[in-house]
Length: 115
Image (tube, rainbow, N blue to C red; front, side, top):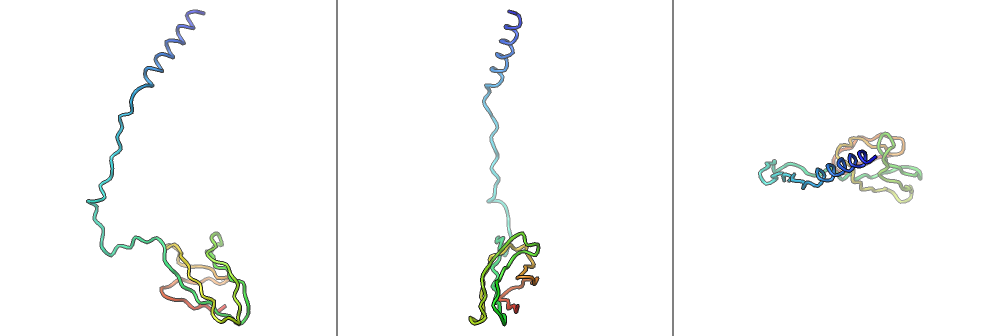
């Protein structure tokens, strides 16, 4: 019994001694100053899309991703008000959106859509 107690004490002592070392790892900072980027490089990950929606009747307007996983806007269009204007900030990787059931390909400038 005493041998087992001494054995476990020795193992515990070895673990404590080996576990008390100072961490000498020092992270290296990347040198962004020396990195070269083109002056016309666009750092923005989103783009602004301006939509003008028109219709002959009142509608609920839902603007979402094509797969309906992301909703960008939801509102009510009233035909008596004329044009329903929406400004959205959308990731640059998105090339198409869905307005109600209509898939629209995005372009630069103000886009006019008739529902």
